[in-house]
Amino acid sequence: MNKQGSQHWEEENRGANLTDRVYEELRQNILLGKYQDGEALTELGVAKELKVSRTPVREALRQLELEELVEIRPNRGAVVKGITIEDIRDIYEIRIMIESMAAARAALEAAPEDLDMLEETLDLTQFYLERENYEKLLSMDGRFHQQLYDICQSRMLRRILKDLHNYVGRSRGASLKTEGRAIESLHEHRLILEAMKNHDAEAAKARMAEHVRNTQNNIMRIYKEKKA
Image (cartoon, rainbow, N blue to C red; front, side):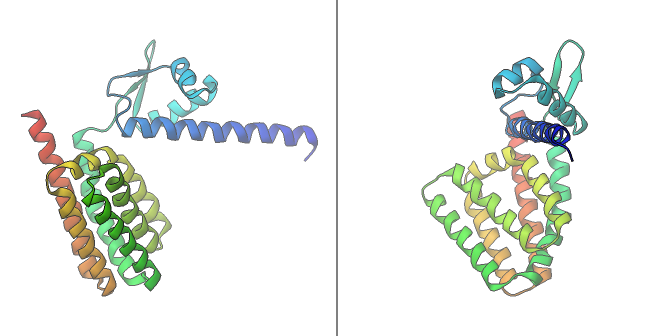
């Protein structure tokens, strides 16, 4: 590759990387509720906010439209669609099926060091629970599930589950803050870990399905109370 061709490739690569970063930033802001449903995101406004040019913003918004997180409308820009309660319900139904399968596989694949890693995460969860640090509790909750995804040694499962987990990050945080739920969630995580220590795939599968279902039920209850 000649010098001119190399420079062109580097410029394209930088542009692609910048688009990816803008996309991830916007996606995370939508999922966490920083941008409200119905809010219009203009290329110029987002470019100023993120201190980038309009080109990566335009490409990022197109990607988000394909993901149905925004809808690009004439004269309004990209209108945020966000995650609905129906989306959340569906995501948890999918998670119950797939994540319980991942837990079963992880129970068979887990090495002693993997189990120690999960135990440490749960000990940290207990530490933050006693101090009512809900930001850290949410982080530890995410870490436990991510570690389990890694242990199951399936690239496809890990990718799908990580994405689904991120989609409901905001609702998971609300769920953990309800009275008694953080304590229950930690107990459920410990039961999953116990099944993994015993390399009991069926028990790990059942415990994970129960845990995800309980979280789903709690989130749906919160939503109904808000609507009442």
